[in-house]
Every structure is written in C-alpha cells, then in structure tokens.
Amino acid sequence: METEKRMKVLIVVGLFLVVTLLLWQFGVFEMLFIVGYDHQRGITTDGNYIWVVKGNGMEVYKYQMDGTYTGDHWWTLNEDVINPYGIATDGNYIWISDIQEYEIYKYNMDGTYTGIHFDIGASGGTGFNEITTDGNYIWVGTSQTRIVYKYSMDGNYIDSLSVLEGGYSHVDGITKYGNYLYILSGYSNLYGCSWKVSKYLIDGTYSGETLDLPFDGKVSFQGITTDGNYLWVTNRNNDEVYKYEMNGTLIEGGIQPTDYCGDGICQSNENSATCPADCESGQIIIVFRLTDNTCNMITINPEDRQENDYNTLYECESYIEQICGDGICQSNENSATCPSDCGDNQITVYRLTGTTCNQIQINPEDQQPNDYTTLSECENHITNGEEGKLGIGLIIGMIIIGILLIGLIIFLIRYLIISRRNS
Image 1: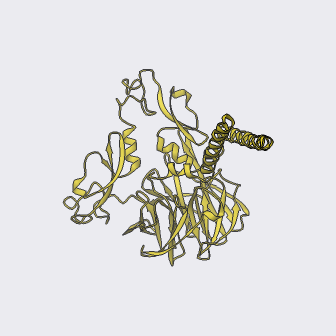
Image 2: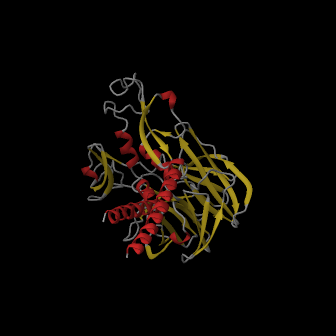
Image 3: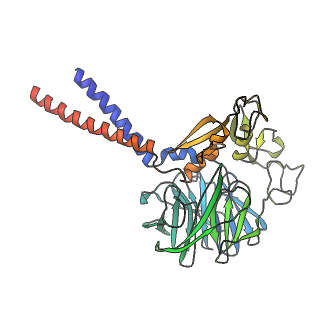
C-alpha cells in the first residue's frame, strides 16, 4: 500500500511538471504579459493611405501619406478578436493579427469585418506579432525568435524563413516591398535604445543591408511599413510615427498625435460640451480608471470622466509608479527628491531574469542593462523577445524536470516488475 501511495504522488507530480513545461513551451505564460498592455502597434500602407493600430489596440486610424489624419477610424472588435496587434493590406483588404488567439482576421478597406479568419498556430511558432502581405502571401513575424512564417492568403502554412543576420534576436516589425522583406528589431532599456532594419530577399537570403535608425529621445519602436519611397515606424512610447528615407535618414514630420479638438476623435478629456465637433451627446469612450493602485479599463460617457481616469494603460500605470510617499523608491526618485521613500538612496527597478520580472531595490550605480523603470516596460521586453530567450534558470528547470521524469519512468518499471513477481 505504501508503494502504491508513493507511485500516485510521483505520477501527480510528474504530470504537473509536464503540463507546466508544455504551457511554457506553447506561450501560455507569455499571454499574461501581452494582454492589456497599451501602446501604438502595427502600421501598414497601400501607397495611398496609412493605417495604424493604436489606442488600446482595438482601433485602427487612417492617415494620408503626409501624416494628416483623415478623420476615419474603426473598431477591430468582433465576436472573435481579443487582442489585435499587427496590420497589413494589399489595397483590397486589410488583415489584422490577434496575438492572444494566434489568428489573422480579414476586413474590408472600410473596416467592416468579412467574417473570414484563420489560425496561424499550425507553424508551431510562438510570440506572433507583426504581419505583412503582397496579396499573394502573408508573412508573420515572431517576438520570440528571428523566424518569419509564410502563409497562403487562405491561411495554409507554407514555409518559415530564418532571418538571423543584421539585427537583434527577435522581430519587432515586418513589411514587404517588391522582392524584399524589411525586418525591424531593437531594444529599449534604462541605458538607452537601438533599432535596426535588415533587408532580406523573400526566400530568406540576407541582402547584406542593415540600417541603424536614428531618432530623437528614447523610443520603443513597434511596427514598420513602406511604399518603396519611405519607411514609417510606430513608436509605442507616444502617439507618433517616425518617417525615414529608404537609406535610414530620419525625416521631420511623420504622423503627429491626434489629440486636439476637431481631429474627429472624442478623446477621453473631451465631451459634447467642451468639444461638440468631436463628441456627440451620449458617445462612449474607453478610459483606464485608477482605483486602489489598480488600473481598470472601463467605458464611460465623456462627461462622466473623473480625475483618476487616464487615456492609456501606460499613462495610468506610470502615475501609480510616480507617487512620492507610496513607500517605494522608484527609479526616478532618490533621497533628495523623495526622502520618505528613498531614505537609503535606493531605487526600485524591475530586473528581467530569463523571462521573469522581479521587483528589487538597488543603489542607482548598481543598475544593469536588464533593469527597467516599470513593470509594464519589463514585461513588454519579454513579449518583444529581447530577453525572451531560454535563460539559465529555465534551462536548469528543464533539466530538473527531465531528471524527475526519468526517475518516474524508472520507478514505474520497477513497480511493474515487483507487481508481477508478487502476483
């Protein structure tokens, strides 16, 4: 009886470890970091207009090629879409990727959903984000590796391309023009940022060309598109799109924020009384309400906006982390600016180790490249694959699981042998 009890315990433990490993392998844990993060996302163009997935990821905004907002925007929400991210067009239809469901959805050019979608999980990849198309095929990038997956227009998986040269260890954005794919990759942390665009033939052959993108301030680029004359890159840190020459020269202008009265959008700081041009009476907007140090996404009438409502999740979370007197010495605080939190001159950072963000307090001079100011910023680098590789901790964990499984198999074999002898 004692032997049977031990066997049952080992079987339960072994199954738990196997399931945990499988959940990690197939990216279930990754979704915890992806869902709900708020920033500007994918971008695409047909040469006549530019579309950007922005806000909380559920709206698409349309611009003229000079960056002027057309006043046209539409929701990507339907009964299936949960977390829209990448966007692509061939001038006839628009496709949008869902990074939680691993699906691609097809829309008409006016934003009406066609009801057509297909699964991109058949390739076996994880961390899918940005997409591009030429009307014949769809290519999908992944934030976990430098692999691009190729699909037919009806969703059949065709092939994968390894794009390892000329950039960083993941794909932040992808676009196609002519016979070339342009791969955006980079990083952004406490010590700065760097972004590159690598050029590949559509068969995955590296062209030998890689551009170092210049920028003003600190940026965290997301999507990329081109019409063959210029490159446009979205910055998830703000509401701007950077415009470049094809040789990587930054052009002033780009796409500017659409946050003024008369831009055709009822912003969360506008209502039918303060801006009747944008806000109809009874119109619904999405805000992030800060309650008990938690940011909750809600829909409200503009006139019901409160002081603790914010336009984006990023803005809301940033406000939480900038409060002097909350008992946490933030990375933008010290003993001089906030003595109540930083008596020992330490700061709080989120250190990315493997694929885990750990909140720690350190001396400012002890900051490391994998330390981030906010939890959102740290988790975002996990989803972008900069630190989403197998860390030593995960490798050790997999070895331990393997040893336990081998031990379980040996125990089962011995148990069966003993059982036969006793019978």
